Image (cartoon, rainbow, N blue to C red):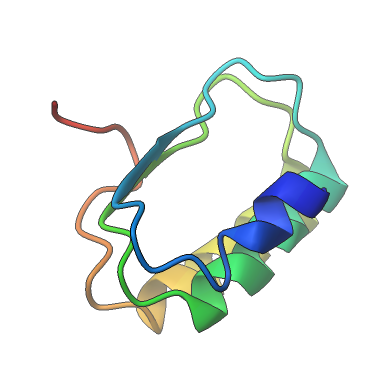
Length: 77
């Protein structure tokens, strides 16, 4: 989760692909925390993971508070 937490203060990365990465509830919650303090990320793909309800709720709350995140599905390169 250290890697996920680092995105909270990263101001250069715009897009993250972590689909099918064996992420669970804890990682979903951690991504919610990271998004709450990151205003530069514009796309995040966490598809095909087992994030569960607490992770999903943390991500939804962070997405509502993060107007710059235009896609929570995938990155366009």
